[in-house]
Length: 104
Image (cartoon, rainbow, N blue to C red):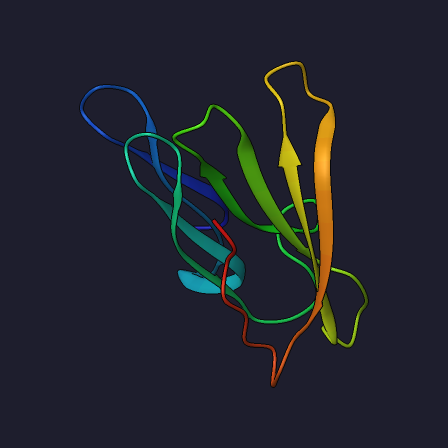
């Protein structure tokens, strides 16, 4: 297989998005819960899909996203989005060895 691979839950929601070349994962691989929350994210280099590697729908109605702030992955920019697609709050956190803990 070559190109973007998209797998779906029986209900139609996206379960997994990955880029494959010659049947080998190249680039990113994102697994989602049925509600759209990021379950697992892997990327061989660079940024994720459009720079995003984390997305979660919060119980308070906001959406939390996480993006690396630079190509060195030295910090993460967390943003809380309203349903109107406007940023309500943002927070920058230095990462340690490209590791992060998502704020809730």
